[in-house]
Image 1 (tube, one colour):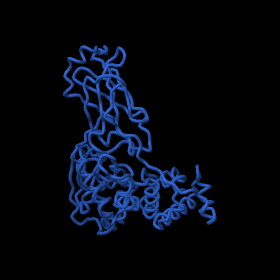
Image 2 (image 1 turned 120 degrees about the horizontal axis):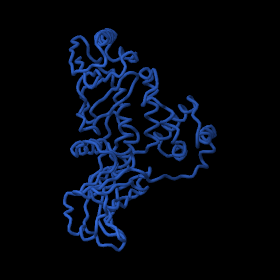
Image 3 (image 1 turned 180 degrees about the vertical axis):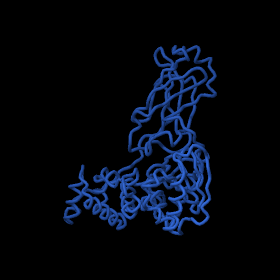
Image 4 (image 1 turned 120 degrees about the vertical axis):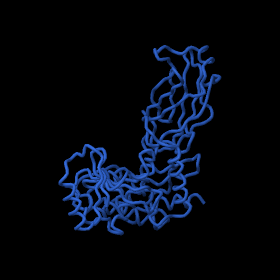
Length: 382
């Protein structure tokens, strides 16, 4: 095993896929470390980044008892944090074959929750979030030996609490795969004492089989509003218009259509002001309310926040905060206009294309580690 020190932390190798390909990296925070893999490379090596080696009591499960001792003794003799990049070779230490398979699948489950590229434009179906979170919670129970204290990815209640209403609708589903998963999830919720909106009713329904027959059949469509071609103030003639793409790592998950060119913008006159009208394609069910948006074209720009439907109207001003005039807007070259939605991050379009190819492949033919939500999404495409 090669241990690499960078940014003050020791890791078993470089960051998978590189920082610019962040959407391609599945991560799992366990006690004292973060495990990571490149999602579209099934044989890629596991990277272990130690955040607190003294808390990583599980390490022997992954590298064996002698490996655990070797890593602990080697890193324990070094100053922390490490100020300079450094590499150490532990020739007698390696990951035990098969030891991280369940952890990788759990990491992929969390990746699906955060990065799945649902897109009406690209024809990539969304995943049933309730069923996905239930299955991730059940997998987490099997990995409790790696969660000896609280981590970001070990909170079972956070996974389950929001989904009682959706699971109630699934109780009378004709698909036995769904019914079995719901019952297992409800059993887990009962075991850990979950309470909240809909949970008492869900517990009662499963305790009384006759109540299942009284539940109305139905479902919901997670797709909401999508950006359209009409992006100017009503009745106004656009001075300029164009499209932009949202960086996935810049915004919260499960809000925007994950296709490219998912933002339409136009410049027009509204009253006495020159404005940029921005419409991002929202795929729901969560609103886009409050997500920052900025428009820049040379020395002119404007900023604000999207509304629930992904729309924003921004007054354009120069660097001295003086409003742009209509005549200046008509004379302006809008060719290199940029629209930034969310945070300013570095992310490549190529990494997003890799994610889409991987997602389509999983929908076309379920992988061995596929989640039920993926299988159902793939079946709905036919």
